Length: 126
Image (cartoon, rainbow, N blue to C red; front, side):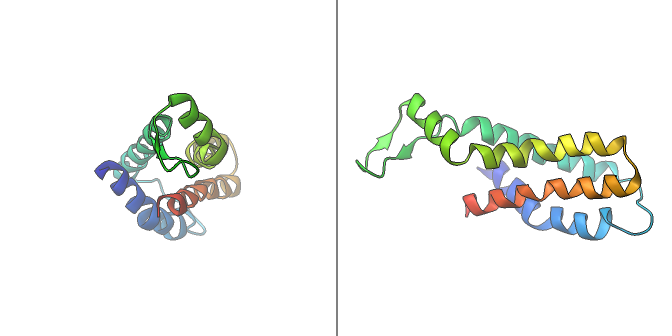
């Protein structure tokens, strides 16, 4: 709970700040400090762990009003509802970053926009 709270606070506050004021700085992008990279990887790992745990979190069935603890039903519900958003928010930023590292400066700056889907996860958590 507390780890995801920190990850969500980071995603809601510091990540947009860094994207707007640090990484899209024109005309020259400076190398990111190691502290930011460590923080970003910690948040990435937290979201990945949360994504895996979602397959095991029980939920209250809207029809019966009972808590559903059948792992198959939990997994099916997660795959139908939130999995796509979580997968995009978790994996697309890293894939875009890898692609951008071999691209020009403008492409690298554009690839950082791929981190924005993580903000969509905040809607699910609120």
